[in-house]
Image (tube, rainbow, N blue to C red; front, top):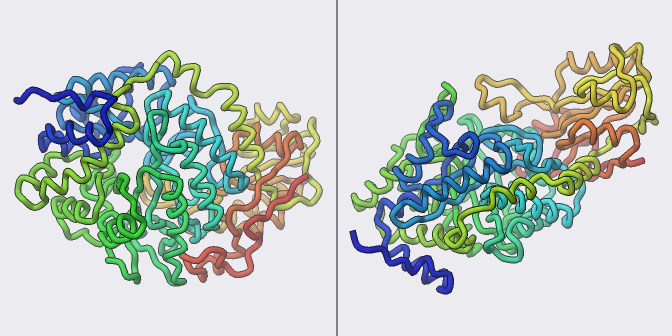
Length: 585
């Protein structure tokens, strides 16, 4: 093989020159490896990982040396910061041993709150812990969002994470939708402001060697789901616009483009009843090329959502490709259609040999491949990965989850709590006899004497999860969907407790639950969007002040929800509480 021209490693040259020098030497197999952005597992104690049978993933070495891939989404809870950093460095060493030494780019779903969904968000206790994005929407503070994102950037880069598979700037206009928690709520203007601040915090004034590239999602807005079902699953594949508000859902993305967002992820859903082809957005040329590339002039990386091409089996359960509208196409035909749409990367796929065969057969030109390869290489160079691919594993230990970062995260958790109603019960005095449900009794004992029954108590505190319907498979139940009504047994139990003792109910509002019966029974109701037990108890006992304002309307009934239009914000009739409602002490 021809001797490698290593001038692409020369940082004194322009990025454009370095890209062309490298690209001109890449084999088709090496180019193909750039196009696949899939899950990877972290080895124990900083070592490389072998095959993962639970998720059907190959070893780290097979990915990098065998398939020549170098974009990965880190799956699962990270170990300590030090071992995560060591693993990252070993992975980069493996990449450096390949012919051209193209470094690895690691990405991650959100990791700074309490969600733990392997398909959407992960909990990493090594990092500082903050409220979910709905909590930031409740605070409406752009400076705080930018500060959070800057802290997250520092914690990510310390362990080698360089792409954030977020922010999620969809509008939560369908109250039943399962993906509202990581959004900034229902209002387009608020989402636009906070989304732009988030991008600035991760990327800085411009993308560079200290940045984490933000991948804003889900273009062109994933909120208007038919019946609120999610398009991870076939029954949720349709996005509908009965109110004619397609353009409104583009507004947060316009703000993201102005903020310089580096990457975009289209959603799984397929638009129904619009001018666009009724196929999933990742296959949709009029959306990716027509809207994103041509109308908005976006020349960054477009990565599809995960698993559009191949069927999978995870933990023994089938997980079909989300090839909505093109289910009849073969994996080969789906890949060609995605490339024709204008996308650059296949999320959640690891089949570069198929792309190589498609190009060699003449179905897709190598010139088309080079267009995306340039974008993908350009970002690696811009992030400084060719110049400094390694991190300082010892420094990572002191840089991640610092006392300062954790304190700021807890302060944001406390402030984001939204007090919805209060009949004079709050704030609770410290030292009371407390009956608690949904709170660790040992932690509650720091604020009062925990008793075994409501009759013995001076006050009761019940923490509830917003309701959702149980579905057939494990993966479906990671996505809370269906009715927003609390089950009768929950309402009856609450009424019985409240009849015996003054009762405070705190509800984790990952969706806008039907709270009328809860408010009627309880002496006070608060909403949280990701708070630890001490944070909520600090608020309930008056040691901290709730500052949150609702990031969406709270509907008065499921009948009102079912009658609302999924693409139209604030469209449920006579809501119980309006967007922006929130009491304080």
